Amino acid sequence: MAEETVGRLLGSGRTADVYEIDEAWVLRRFRDGYGDARAEGAVMAHVREHGYPAPRVRLADSSRTDLVMQRLSGPTMLRALTEGAMGADEAGGILARLLRQLHRLPAHRSPGSVLHLDLHPDNVILTPDGPYVIDWDNARDGDPGLDWGSSAVILAQVAVDDGPFAELARPLLAALLADPSDLTEDGLAGALRRRAANPTMTSREVELLGDAEQLIRTFMRDRRGGPSGAA
Image 1 (cartoon, helix red, strand yellow):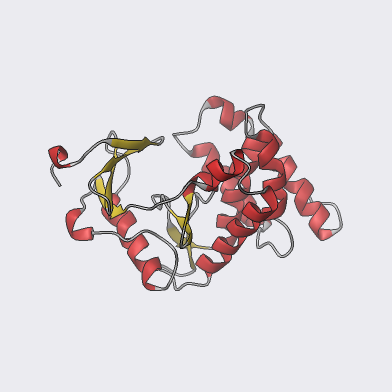
Image 2 (image 1 turned 60 degrees about the vertical axis):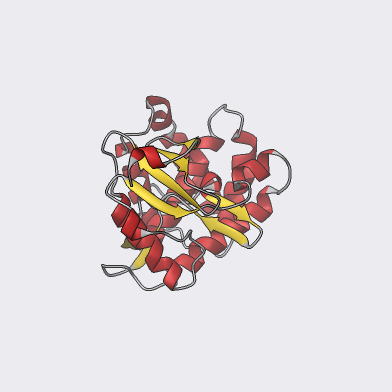
């Protein structure tokens, strides 16, 4: 799709911008050659075919940098949390349900389960039809424990920081990891390695990984009723 056909800028993330096309569709455009929009769209189409709440995509109109997808109506889960429209227990339960639902789907291309690897409150849109998961750029097939670990590490980094969302993130993390959680030692270790190697992380965010791991292990220990060893 030619650049001049898109409308106003609707939002920006670390690696991409979202533009209006019309009332039904938006275009997400990666910046600086980052990502593969067609590969991302193929994963979204796959999970949708199996009943998972991801936006519709128009692969024929997409390219490596541009993904044309359904325009969703509703706030992000993060916005609902910050405005008091949703509590941490409810939000954590929804995230856990979305992870379990995703991991029951057939793998896309490789052995294992479909993993999102970036499921957190700002990537869930609360539509009138229920929560929808966006931003599938990191998706791959693999062990579900890595997906649980990735979501836990993202929340824990916020919880151990001194930013405005820290007080929300801790009870949200606790709700996510409430029994039964599929977080494993290997999943946590893999998520920490991936997060440390992520080029979009700031130095501050990388510094917080040690404290984030300790917080996650506190919840793992409480859940299991005993001490949790180092990864």
